[in-house]
Length: 183
Image (tube, rainbow, N blue to C red; front, side, top):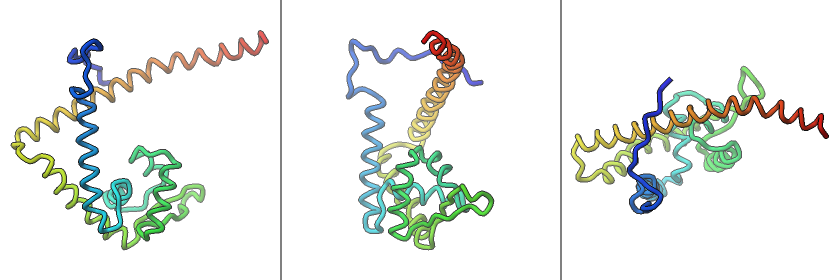
């Protein structure tokens, strides 16, 4: 199991500034990327939110369960349903029942969705390259490495916190049953 490294001390509550927050800067960079991608995909009738499922379906090269697609894109089930409703109205995808398990709804791109999905890598490449203007390949690799390290640290923190919560959850049930007896 990966261990969580000791926390850095770059930030302190007494001197914290949003403008110097790596999280705030990443959010602003992401917002800029999304804005530019939206502008470039607008002529094709797609938004940032809408190209993501099409790109994921393109990568998988097979229909995906709606629940799996929602998990992969980190979208709640209600949001995924609304997103797929819009994509279906635009003719980019269709939902069908699984032939193996009728309870499972699968989503697959239509020919128009496949065509739209093929635009995405070129648009993303153009937008990301524009955001990386002036970076050397070494700087780009260092940025990618740093972001991956931050992600690994966050995932290790999450696993550690989940492991700490598990024993607490075991103690909740006995407390609830004790309260029922006392009442």
